Image (cartoon, rainbow, N blue to C red; front, side, top):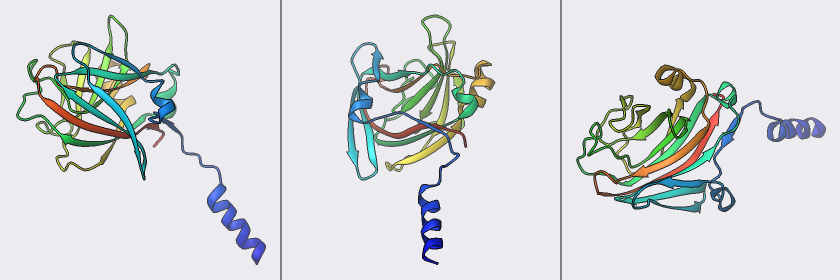
Length: 206
């Protein structure tokens, strides 16, 4: 009986899982791999750690900078089509129209797609306090970029969203891969200050 209980305990805690994940590392070592890219005044990104692990804090005060990582595996979305993101918005914009050039800022968004100097096909998975979840538009600034609102949470608490980015990229840009992932909090158009947090950003198979 003791042997049987031992075997059951072993299987419960040590059996391999078939779930697939590809996580963005927000630890001190992982932050070294994230490259800064933007223009004008910079968004300030700092990482921290609590009882749930590492998180990223973004403070944008008329700034526009992202943190990005190259994804070399073009087959990634075939195996893991879902992107999971956990947000918390501490300070959001006050009354901006994100469908216009002057108001086209986002307190928190994660960008995927085909990134290159000319002919990019981008998808911004965004938080908005003003637009409904599921809202989709072509960026007023960039023909090859789409804004897709995945969060309208105004609680100021951590909240998680899961999105089938492979399906979205197929529907919006007719591509089935991403060659990068970028975290981008910006306020350069509205000239306001925002504070947002990110954690648990990862691709998964379900």
